[in-house]
Each structure stands twice: as structure tokens, then as C-alpha cells.
Amino acid sequence: MTTNTYQYQEGFGNHFSSEAIKGALPKGQNTPQQCPFNLYAEQLSGTAFTVPRTHNYRSWLYRIRPSVVHTPFEPVDACSSLVSKFNDSCIVTPTQIRWSPFDMPAATDKVNFVEGLRTLAGAGDPACRNGLAIHIYTANTSMDKLAFYNADGDFLIVPQHGSLDITTEFGHMSVAPNEICVIQRGIRFLVNITDKEVRGYILEIFGAHFELPDLGPIGANGLANPRDFLFPVAAYKNETDVDWEILSKFNGRLFKAKQNHTPFDVVAWHGNYVPYKYDLSKFCVVNSVSFDHMDPSIFTVLTAKSNTPGVAIADFVIFPPRWAVTEHTFRPPYFHRNCMSEFMGLILGDYEGKSDGFLPGGASLHSIMTPHGSPDANVFEVGSKNELKPVRVGNNTQSFMFETCYMLSVTPWAMKTSGKVQDDYWKTWYNLENKFSEPN
Image 1 (cartoon, rainbow, N blue to C red):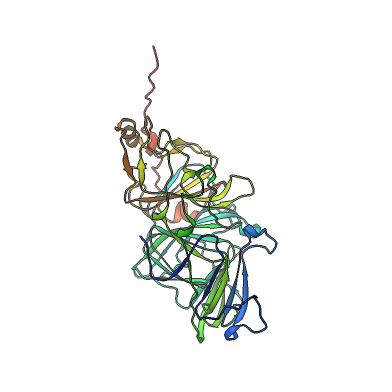
Image 2 (image 1 turned 135 degrees about the horizontal axis):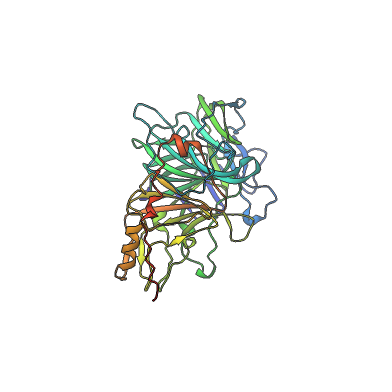
């Protein structure tokens, strides 16, 4: 589904310029003695100043008041279900885990996007700029005069149910199921709820930014094409004497400050550190047209690279509708033990490798070197005997994977409080029989 409520600019990795009022951007310099329309110039740096130019991210914002105009931050009574420190309070297990769909807020409760954040798993520590966290969100009310920013990392948001109407300092984005958005570290935003209720997944990375994967011998085209990534255009409000709260996630804790004006007062901006969205239906699938499986890395939309070549802090991978045409091949996903952790979610439909149990709004986690595989006994039988003619796979469905090189710890909320762990998940494979035909 594509949402076109707002205007956007196109192109991953571009340096953009945007004005809500013509002439609001200074010409030829970033910090003139007096900015047009008496605006304030403010730089937002997403990387250190001296990072190589190919990976240096920053934007200049020209706003009615600088973001520093607020009261001191004060701690917020933290929700124990939002976790950024994966220490001994979390649960370590190699067991395969699957969750039923996570509950929506009760109709009698008013829960906004931030209040509805719950952490499922993660590794590392934002204070050391190393690691990640996986969250679920549910909400049924908009953020009213409340802006949020994450000082710990970048959010990759995957709506599963209901659309998000997001206001950022750079402008507006409307993000529906089967679309994603990325809001980087430090960018203030709020989420308006236009549907009765919403639910989705979040991948938070502490120490890097997302980029397009290298294509290697695939060539210049394919997978997620740069032109399909959409970036907001400048939009602002000019209001004073209106009470706002600024909520910050800083080193795993929540803090709040107050100010008497909107934080969304950026009249113009330019730069390459900008939130963006992407429609997953535009992914150009590449796969085998002869025999065997390509590795699932061929379905990578975005990656956050580690310092080890070819190893990702996190990959965002999807399994979209496509054709299966391989010959002499067991076509369902194969059995596997992996040096990476695999967290999977289902946005819509019925995942091809599971006949039941893996449902939209639920999830699974297969940890490093723990055996797993999509075929249960029924899927294995069908996949072993089906006529191998060209068929469409995954019509009207969309599943995804957050894959990481880290060993993930699971939060107490995910394992116990949520009540969604399927204790009999291990039985998925238990009926796989010994089919060995030993020669005489």
C-alpha cells in the first residue's frame, strides 16, 4: 500500500534542500550574520565531523526558535518494558521462540506511540554506541503537544496494523503497513493515530546508520532502488505560548523537558541527515532461475554495517511476493544453523514456510547456531512432492527479518509479562520423521 498524503523528495543518499517559504534558505553559506526572515541556523550532526565524506551525515535547519529553548530535562518514571541495557535482568536462551500477535491497548486506555513501546530483545549498550534493540509498538491515541527524540540510536519502523501520520522537524510522512520509515538519532517527531489502533515493529541500532547494501555482481540495479526512497519537504508552525513537552530517550532512560512553543518550527533545511520512508512493494526481487536457493541476504532492503567487511550489525530483509521457478529443488526455506540471530515478523498474509502459528503481529526469534527451518512436517511433505512448475510465492503476504551478528538477550516482558510466547513452538519440527532409506 502506498500513501501519498504528503509531498516528498526522492533519492537515497542525496543532499536535499527544502523551503516552506521561498527564500528561507541562505544562499552560499550556512550561517550568515542574519538568516532570511530572522530565522535561527542550527546544525544537526548525525556523525562525527571528521567521518569520511561518503558516510558523513548532517543537516542545517533554519527555524523560528532554536531547539535549545526549553527547561532542564527531568527523569521520567521509566517504563520497565522499554529496555536499552541488556544485562542480567534479561533472559538468555538458545531455544527457538515464537510469539502470538501482541495485544492492542484496551479501548478504555489511551496509549500513545511512546507509551506503547515494549522491548522484545537486544544486545549491547547505547552508551558505547554498539548494539541494537528490537521493540514492538501498539497505540490508540495521538501524541498531543508531545515530541520525542531518541539520543540512543536510529529507529527503523515497520507498521503492521494501521497507518502512522508522523510529523518531524523536516516535515511530514504518512507510513502505512507494507511501508517502512527510518527516523535517525536526535530527530524530534510525533506520531498521530488516524486509525482506531496501530501496531508494528521497530529495529533500533545504536552505533551506525542504515545504508543500501552493495550489489556486487548484481550490477547497478535491483533490490531496493535509491529513487524509491521518499524524504519529507519542509513544513512548519508558528505558535508561541503553547505548552509542549520534549521527551528524550537518553542512555536507555526517558527524560522530559518543557517549552512554550512548537518544536516543529523549521521553515527551511538542507542536508543528508533526513528521515525517510520506503514502499516495500517496490522492492525488485532477485533470485535463482535455475536450481537451489540463493541466501536470504539477496532480499536485503537496508543494512547497518559493522567494522568487519560483510558482517552486519543489522540487516532488514523482506520476503515479498515473487515467482519460484527452480528445478530439481526443495523450494520452501531450508533447515539452517546460522552465525547470525534471526528475528522475524509478519506484516500481512500467511508466511510461506509455516502452515499455522506464525501470524501477523506476532514474531519469532532463532538465535545464533540454534537449529531452525521454516518447514514443519506438513510443509516438508508438500515441498518434497509438489510438481515443480513456475508458481507465485507469497501472494498477498509480506514477512520480514531483522538479522544481526549479535547474540540477543530477551526481555522479561517478552518472555513472561506479554503472555504471548508459544510454549509448544518446538513441536513444529518434532514430527519430522526418519526417512532414511539405507541401502541393503
